Image 1 (cartoon, rainbow, N blue to C red):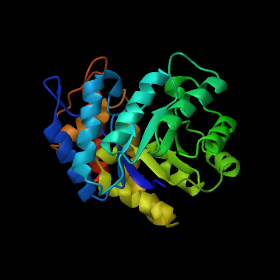
Image 2 (cartoon, rainbow, N blue to C red; image 1 turned 45 degrees about the vertical axis):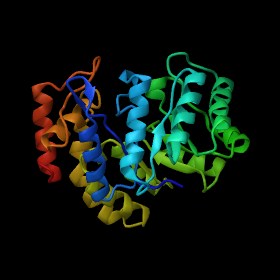
Image 3 (cartoon, helix red, strand yellow; image 1 turned 90 degrees about the horizontal axis):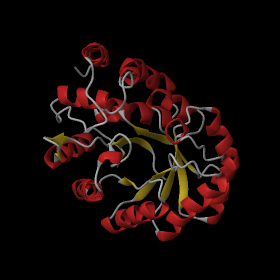
Length: 291
């Protein structure tokens, strides 16, 4: 089971190219700060704008730099089932500990389509598969009934990254799928509450720039020390909120650039922050004590 603070890694760029040196530096820094795992080439990693070759390079580099010290769950989602299968097979061959597969976006499949999509990916690999349920981006919601059917049919479908924003789902999914089904929040600001309801951790954006604090928050909440977790939450809440004032990952890349981790460069159609939002983030960084 994957637990704690798992970073949805940003993909640094330099003059339009992947900045592999900065990516390696970010991974090393986060491991030193206590991070519990990585998800390269997810939404925060700007995967929609990476070529297949670039996607593979980021996955392989993340695995090579990590050297087994923490798990790497490779992003392997697509709205094309055959493409997702190939990405998942590549991740397994590269040495990933698992794959994260988003629900197909734009083509809006039925629950039966979702079942067949995820079954095809799971049957093509032997490593764990985490479902990524994010209706705000993909429109479709992987129902709890479909998750239960997938868990029964495909033993390597072991959990979900839940970005529904619905905290009631945690308990409902636990009742339907059991304590052993790996429930990971996909939303930083509700991650503490998610764990309090029975979750196991968070695939996080803020951990890219506050890995120590967010790892401590996760450890405290998972051990039942909610007082300590709340103290950290209060430090991080303005930053958690402000990172998403404009479309992510512009906010987290701006903060990363201020911390000297990488440039704030994005790929179109993502654009850099406006000055007013930069000022909000500067204040939120100071409040969190990471300025």
